[in-house]
Length: 382
Image (cartoon, rainbow, N blue to C red; front, top):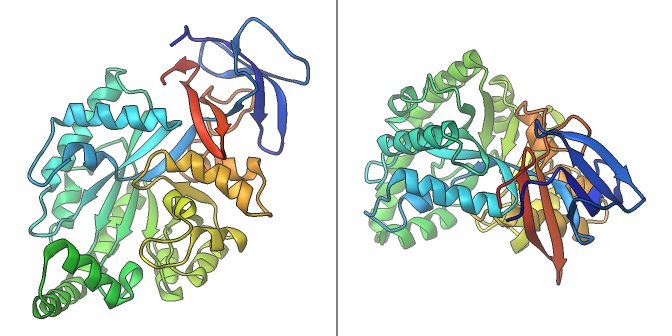
């Protein structure tokens, strides 16, 4: 890596509303102090005509667990796991990340909420000691149907790095698994259930949700509202789901499974978030509505890398190429300024004077964006 530059020249700057050839100057405080367009300049980091975009903002990635539990019954050192995850995130151009940690587990899950607390502590330590390349926050994925979700939630209730919660319910017969055929295929493949065992499992899960989900959803949402933590709904499929989210003052609609739910969520003022892998693959792996269909209908605000960090930058450039109504600046905003503003981080996400100098140099090679350099607050991190 070169020394931290203060001047980025010979770049294609992706500004909020246009793309211009020019340069960026940042000050000693890690803020953008000047933007020049048109005339070439010298004496700084030469971007070789590559795109220069704001650092990506990731609101929902559960990729950290892959590093902590790389195989069944194998738990890695949490500090090492966070470092490995952070390096992969930064090299994908993500400078602000909300690490999604589960609260509410299956009874036979390999991970427990104590493991999530260990990972949260490792994030806190790495951030405090300035060992992390990206800026990390915590997103709690709350499985409201799980019997232990409230107990698990309490170990995070005083954690100031928790800025977002999502209210999830993966009960068969609704939301992501409205198709019992899809649910059966997923769980029988995962657990090796017979048909009779699968039938019993479905009934048990539905009864569990009836008992736990309504009250847990309300209690967690109330606590989040009292703490000023943003709330996201998850896998909404119907107008009833959206109305429920509206009643809880939800700000973000994560992965709506139908166009109807996405339109209603956006109409209610929520930012609609979909998975970048959905864009890259050309559809949902669960058979639900595609992100591209939402984009074509003006109902896609935010992209998340979900389970593939590098998909975030690829999906943004792919959207701009494949959807006529979306320009590259508009596509880039779905992975930078819109998620930042949706969560209240108004100091980043745009190439503008006074914003944080979170910058990513991107070169296009055969329609694939290649991240060539990443800077957070003017300091090179990848």
